[in-house]
Length: 466
Image 1 (cartoon, one colour):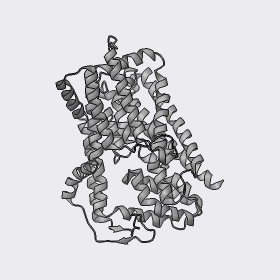
Image 2 (cartoon, one colour; image 1 turned 60 degrees about the vertical axis):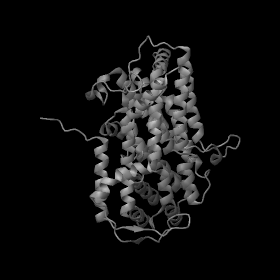
Image 3 (cartoon, one colour; image 1 turned 180 degrees about the vertical axis):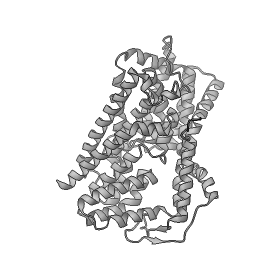
């Protein structure tokens, strides 16, 4: 008798698109009146003629989603090409061998140090899509240290995710929400900082406990039935002791590190967080993609690769991440069907109706639960903030809840859901790169999700009571 297997991420996402399409036949279509800035106006929801999405819309949704997310997809392919060229130099293999030798017996220090670094990115500038570039870099390091792919993915995804869940000055979540709520970015900062510290500490302890258990007993890995797991696309999981660190490989590694440093600097909105002595570049995916393909050429020239080797390495490296680009397009297709079917504002209206007249504590709890649902359907934090905050902030006033607290409710719920939702290109892309089945990620993460849920909700309720 054959064992039932969990379908792939592609199938899961396509099924979700089909279910959403069916809902467009059942749910009423509607929309809010909007201001000149495009903000929905509370109390103006009205039904509009239905626009059910049939089989044709379902088939086209992944492609439309890919069109909408083409900048992200191009960025991922370019990063793959860059890593493909790096693989031709052998510099990463040599660097990994050096790291493992230096941290012999102290590999567990990688987990808290790296998770703290990614959390700082998440809480300051909403580091999410940018983390995709780091998975091929970290996976072989963690695998060589004796951890499994789940541990490696968790270090990045939970590190940055805890930062986003406890966003302090994240302009793409907290900043946009604060703007629509009419409060300053600094209001509510103390509570958000507490949530950040508590969530990150819980995540680090959780990942370290699982990782050390796997190192001591590999058979206890959640991936044990998949055989040897790892990433063998750009580097080898088992680092040869004979990997030699030549001057050219050192130069390639310096350029490699410099490329990522420039990427991080380029996306930090210094002006938005009050830093005036550093210029804000305002880079996004077109500029980041250009950075990586230029870096690929520079690395190839410095190492002395031929034109053929550079092109071949770039194309093959990009090809290894083609599936990740498809995942992103299909994920975005879910939102396409919702918008085209006219049910996005309908779901938002249900939230407005449910919260009207609620008391302070009840308002916080119900808002949190509603935002959990909305975050699943609208994984973009900036998009959800833009759609919901002009409605939720006035509702908070009616319930005696401060507007800065409803911002914290929004970002905590959104940050929690975006650790697991299959509608998030970041989650599905990370799991695709690490070759971690979605159901195993859920199995690994659900206890920590419960901890995040209880801690954040408790802290927000205490804020109301105190």
